[in-house]
Image 1: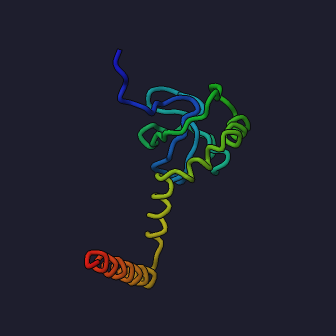
Image 2 (image 1 turned 30 degrees about the horizontal axis):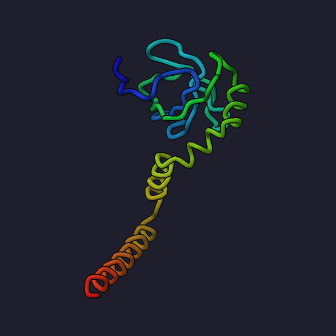
Image 3 (image 1 turned 30 degrees about the vertical axis):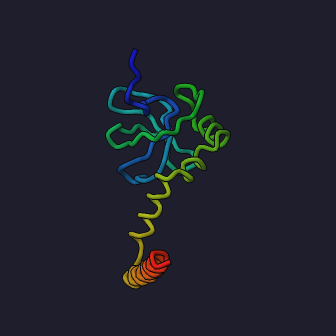
Length: 137
């Protein structure tokens, strides 16, 4: 029997990233599967209310809650999230860090972008000089 290429499945307890709507960019947990188009999601620690949400507006993350029962209420989901420190795992993941960096970059004003450009030029100059010195020696 061959191994499946898929590692992330739509399942109860799967942590998902919301792609659209007023809660876009936040994470939630699949609490119940409605049908092949929608699931009930809940994010008691991230401010996402319990609601039906279409799969096409979700991104499955590699994180999942172990042993979460089907149709679990917000209290049970919150306890499980805190017990497994899932939100902390998400915030420490490279995916979340890249999203935060992109969001920070998007929020910069013109002067801050100019300052970033100058700092990058300074760093580039230091690296270039160190490389030139290393190749001479």
